Length: 358
Image (tube, rainbow, N blue to C red; front, side, top):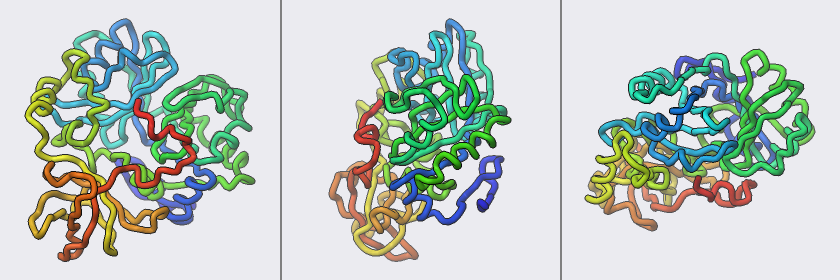
């Protein structure tokens, strides 16, 4: 019953019954997303960590087995090849989950810089990924596994029997701000698992949710989307990702440029803003201050929870202070907005998970 549109070479469910209905189901009960378009690479061997340390900005040496870490792949100009999640599955085995639109680019990038002899395997095309998100997610999924889901921390992972299938990887990463479990399966297992989850969640209000709701949910949390808020010309420091940019861990791609950028100070920065006047901001709308253009919106939407327009964008660093009044140019007219802190919605069922930085 989904509206299907092409995205990054995949046919994707954009919405099922409606973005707002799906959005609020995730905030109040639960939603299930088919995110099988994401890319998955395995990195293994005694030099797996050496490669990951060199190509990512975060410090993967601190990552214990069974935990995950948000990171990015900096380029040699200080920009971002992609943002990703690094999972440590075993002593010498890591899983990298990357964005669908960047699978080929990221794969080539990793191989190009693999001077360490790490073993790389692209399992994207044979791996399905289902995400169940919302206050009822744990209760729903617990019906399908004996693994103690209530004991899992944020950004953790476990292998277990799920929906009758053995050796299934479940992770507690997510993109909505609500408690989320991401289930990695083989393609041939996905349909049966999807149907089992829907059946288990029927009485608890679980519904399928599409990319439309996924976008409004992540924006309410201030989570970035590659291609909008991050790209090859934006640095992790400008994007407010200094917390995943460990400049003291040793040399990695782009580290010298990022150190220089930090010492000189940022020229632009990513801000979150909420509309003060009526209007919905959209990507590429210009941002002004007293009539002068100071930046551009990268992501914007109408927040179903706030019942107001919200967005993110890059502005000249001097205008990025909290509380600063700015203007979003909507249909050639300046509409007032205010710089504020993300997340836009702080009361989530995550009970503090979203506020922790990994």
